[in-house]
Image (cartoon, rainbow, N blue to C red; front, side, top):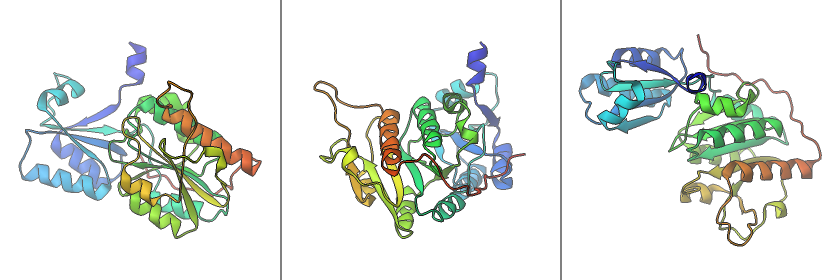
Length: 266
């Protein structure tokens, strides 16, 4: 039972309570869950508040929402999952990283398994990355399961939510970042790339990988070789291999100490 409690997220219930939390901005809301049967003027206000705060919204059947919140809870068709730690500010994270001529960022979209995300965050922190950018499309947030797998790394590396990841990557490229995408269909091996200057390591989810728009934003696409009969490699393992190839080429696992502000929590 203790193990289950450790991985159960904090959930806010009730439409007005969630709207107030979103508008006040003092709690880090990871995701808003809305019953597909819900509607009305107040729901519109909630959706606008979530969009303004950059918080992803997931629409679920009423019975699925009930299972997530518990049958004894009066949720009014909406619920909000609270992140265990605060997200960093994406603008400040990228601006701070751009001050280092050897900056290293990790950008992710479509990572659905919280344990994969936790493992990537832990490896990124160990590799001295400046931070992690999380696209919001089909991407798990900072859940207790992510925190547990990261084993303390959530407190050591800034993680920012980025609903417009493609646009963010283009902006980073204007600051002399090169975007290197993990693409299993690429013929270029991961260790053939020169990881000099400012680098963004970009990876997609377990099911479909990176969508076309993000792949097209990349300056290079690399893949890891697989033995005959093995169809794919775990995304956290693949990202880790590329991050440590960056370190191997650069020769030292360090980063400059640039202060990054996290969004405030009470």
